[in-house]
Image 1: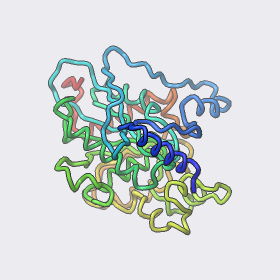
Image 2 (image 1 turned 135 degrees about the vertical axis):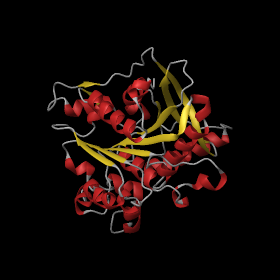
Image 3 (image 1 turned 90 degrees about the horizontal axis):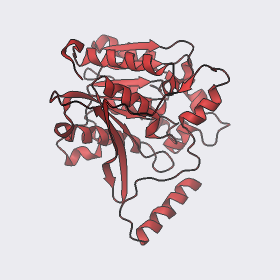
Image 4 (image 1 turned 120 degrees about the vertical axis):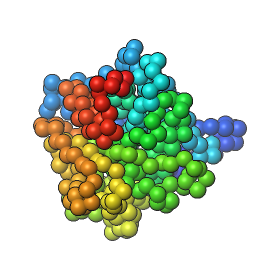
Length: 335
């Protein structure tokens, strides 16, 4: 049994015994995917980079630690960033899913990106979700859809246009975001749908350096590396490709392309292995007339969105793409 899963089970049991009603955070000492730790790995090859600032400017309102879904005593939370204006104009929304190999990472990894989106007139949420040590696939997809439903359910409160909501993510979060967006209407991925009239559909997807096809040879070469026991993907699926072939296929966004697939932006690094499958997915989208864009930032490492000088151009690319899909006219002062 996974030692971390056993520890979590013990912690949950103890908290239940002492009468704790809500668990909002489960500490994992192995969760080291942060901007700081990534910077230490990259600074030798990219000495000019700096960690993107977490500071929130006066023009942006930050609301932290909002619970968006409960699973019995377990509560998942998000942080919300919105333009600090008095206008009653409805704003588009975007939900950010952090990366970390489905096993690690924190929602604060996307705080700088979310703040920048709020500065451009978007209501942005960064979410925590159940990592593989706590819950296997497809729990993270349930969580992402629950976050979208929460944002839409609270659209009036935060002046969000419920008909213009996007989901975005980086690395593993990009794959989660993409799969969340392309599986609209499939109850298997959305157990909340049975008891809620509020939709979890999105109108656009932003996949930042995330996989589109787990079953491809290139993806399996890295994600099913026999030297890793388990591999990141193997830990999420509960088994290697040969053992859980159906799940590896089922979790690949490319296999859900249909005429109702939302527009997708693929924002990718110079490290091609992380965005495996996006070319093949686009070939399925083309005949259906689904809008897409591929933008590659040259000479970039994976996790480029955590750092300057790449944050601003990344935000600009995402804003331009979503503005086009949501028919936003900047001259109308969307902020």
